[in-house]
Image 1 (cartoon, one colour):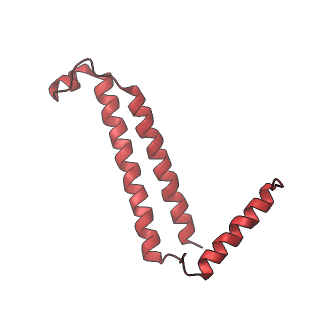
Image 2: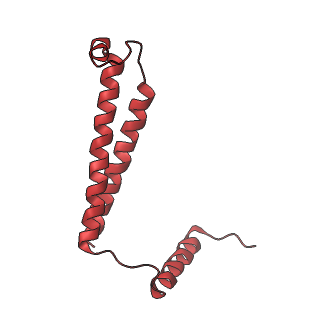
Length: 103
């Protein structure tokens, strides 16, 4: 089997999308639907940033952990990184969705 170039792969994908669109399997989103998706990603981003901030606070301040029934040994900077990563992912998706609304 012949190996496809990146350009050929893109052309094949575009043909596949056109076929699905012509068959009614894919539809264009309304502006309301696009806005709803963008808002979802924006909210998820804000939630993940807040989660990262809370985990960081409890991981770095034993006094705050103690007052909120979190063990003073609690430290989980890995989850701070994970939550922050997802915040960036969701914000990227929000920006991408907003840019699609203009098209």
